[in-house]
Image (tube, rainbow over all chains, first blue to last red; front, side, top):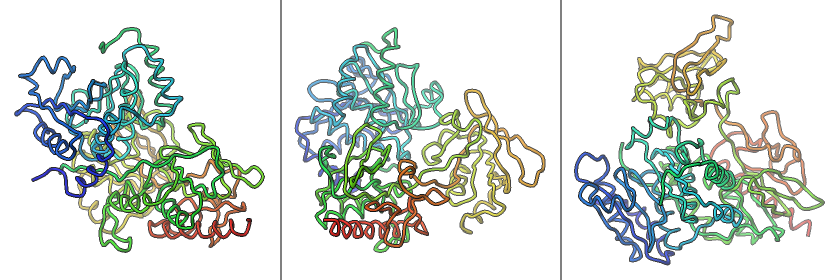
Length: 222
Length: 324
């Protein structure tokens, strides 16, 4: 049985009509000891089947070590949404529930190689010249979360210095306790900065710019 | 948990044009604002819809069983239906924007957004709905995301095995408590009123739960904790002894306040902070109308908000015809 209901498939197909360039979904998975790995892989394949513009590549996290290192994947399930190049857009954990919205939105933006961020925001982002790692913690039942994930991923698309992760809290409890997540969305920037809640575009960009300036040492090079 | 995939209806829409003077600017995209937009498009009004999100409170409503045409529909599915209807019309949209200030310069309304954009309109409908009310006690703001939550469906998973307090006595507080029963060992239900206002069905369910301890007629004094919530202090209204309850989470579900601050200096509000309207959605300012939960219309219901949105546009249309 398909994971996506007919009406969801139809809506996704409708949105994918507007894709312009090819998108590749790179999935890291393994067969055992991974909650939702199986479902994430099936989801990726189902989505790829909905549009000729979308292809999928499945890697085994343990066997394809080199690939995992190349993409800097340290946990699974993981999905990279990329085109000819890797923009630094990642989903850790299944992009289900409300988060399916941010997943489709990432595919859309990557395909068009453009975001709808304002000219002012793009200008600010273009001045970032140090690596920035944004992690957005979510739960799949959080209606406010996709906005934060989409914002972070748009920033990653606009800047080669920014890497952005969606992190599904239930699947990575060690990160939840490491960063003391007790409410979502929670945004962690370069390990030491962060904020709770979905901020509007201007404030979100400001927080990232601020963090990029205060980071003395690059933690996520490349 | 059943794995579900939610995809909202969306389409690229032209965004707002700052150089234009719109016939109608609608502030808010819940049932009132979306219905107002459909009516405006059918009247061929040059319309701009400015909203933080499309759907408003319905987005966070699990089940709807009293919107005509649907015996049962999930809130977000109903929002999708609304969106589907709106997207057939050429309406400029500023989604993800909030209005900072509404003012009137001569005959023209000026709408300044948080993002710094300025739009103009001959008429405006305020349909900005309501948002969660805060307790306004010490510790509350500081501990948001550190144990204090206004969204139990979002944040409940982080409180597995932890003791929590739910503040409020209405349906949303009871639903939050019932959600938490599945994961938390102890739940304190605290409300300032002497009798619960939740539906009897929910009351019966809560009464059966041994994990839930209730404190009606209690006021929250303070939420304590350094880096995260550690305890909550409550005081009985009849002057009894102040109690300190050890909790790691505080879920605040004490109802809603109208989103009317941006218009407070312009238009007359009632005591509850709602935009005062007459039965044709007129406010105290000519050319300015209000609809739905943000307005003083009695009863806050999806179907009423939608009807009020339609009414507000029709009144605005009349106003535009007369002022031509």
